[in-house]
Image (cartoon, rainbow, N blue to C red; front, side):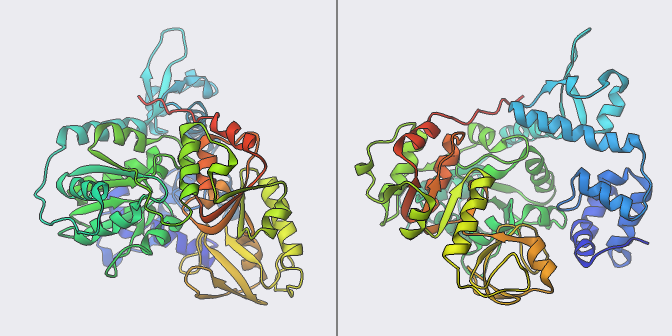
Length: 502
C-alpha cells in the first residue's frame, strides 16, 4: 500500500487517466472498473518504477527516487541507469542545440546493445566503425516523421465562414489560412493582435474545437480572450484524456519541446482533422530539448502579424522589435522607455514588477521591495511573508493554484488571485511557505505570457536577444531599464543559437 499525500494521489489520478492507461499501456478492461491508483501500483511492480513515477507532473529522477525509497519500492541500478541515460542525452542535445549528438555522453556506451538503447528511447542515427556513433531520441525521429507526414498531407478544406469585418488585412489573411488549410501557423509579436485573431478563429470554426496550451499560465491568458464560454486545456491534461474534435488550436507554440510536440501529434492523428499552431517566434525557446515550432514555420502555410495595434506605448513595441533587429537607437527615440541606475529608483518610478535573468538579482529585489514597499505589512501564518505581499505559485495544486499564478496576501492565511479576484485560504503555513515565493520581482522566464502596466528590466551581462525582447515587451504602458543603453545593446548582440534539426 502506497503512502500518498492528497496532492500525490491527485497527481496520479490526473496523469494515469483511463484514456492514458488504454492508449499508452494497452489497458483492456472497462472504464467502470478502472482505478488510477491501483493501476499505478501495478505498473510499479511490472515496469521500471522510475519511468512510471516520472510520468507524473513534477517528478524527475531525484523526486522519483525519493518517492520510491519512501514507499520501500525496490529498484535496481540498471533501472536507475535506464531512467538517467535518456535525461543525459536530452540535456546534451539541449546544450549543443542539435537533434543528434555523439554517443560519448553515455558512459560505457559500448556495453549497451542497440535493443537496450532503444528500450531507453535512444536511437543510433549514424554508425561509425571505431568511432563514436551519433545518437538521438526516439521522439526526435517521431517528430521528423510527423513533419514529413504533415507536408505530404497538406491540403485545402472548405472555408465555410467569412472573416469578421473587425479584422485588419493581416489578421484576415491569418483567419483565412487557418480555416482553409488542414495545417497552418500564425506568428506575431507583442501588440499585433495575435490573441484577438486566435479568439475569432476559435469562435468561427465549424465543428468541435480544442484549444491547447503548454502551461497553466498560458491557459489562463488565452482564456481571458476566448469568446462565448470557450475554454482551453493544458496539453498535459488533454493528452491524458484526449477527445475527438474537428480542429486543434495550439497557443504559445514556441514553448513546444520535441516531446510535447510528439505528444500532441500522436493524439491529433487519433482524434482530429485540422491543427493550427500559434505563437511568437521571438519568445524564449522551450526549456526542454527541440524547437519544432521553428521547423513548422518552414513547412506549413504561415502568416506573420506585423502591424502594431497598440494605441498606447507604441515605442515599447518598437523597442522590442529593434532589439530583435539587433540595433536600438538613442534614448529619445523611445518616449515610453526610461533608464534608471538602481532597483530602488525603478520602484520609486512606479515599477509593478522587476524582471531579470539571475535568481540572485530576483532575490535581492524581492527582499528590498518587501522591506521598503511593504514595511508595515503584518505577519502571516508563514514567517517568510507579510500581509500585502505579492506572491507567485511555484508548484501546481489541482483546483487550488498553478505554477506562475500570482496572488496578494490579504490576511494572515488568505490570498487574493490578482487576475480573478478569487480568494485562496491556505490549509496551513506549510502550504503557503513551500509552494510560493515573493513576486515583486521575477525571472524573465517566469514572466513569459504575462503583462504589467509598468515593468522594470535589469539586464545582466549574459542576457540574450530573446531575453531582452521578452522582458521589454511585458510592459504595456511604461518600461524602465535598470542600467544603460549599452547594457541592452550587449544583449542585442547575443543572438539565440539556432537549433540544428535532423
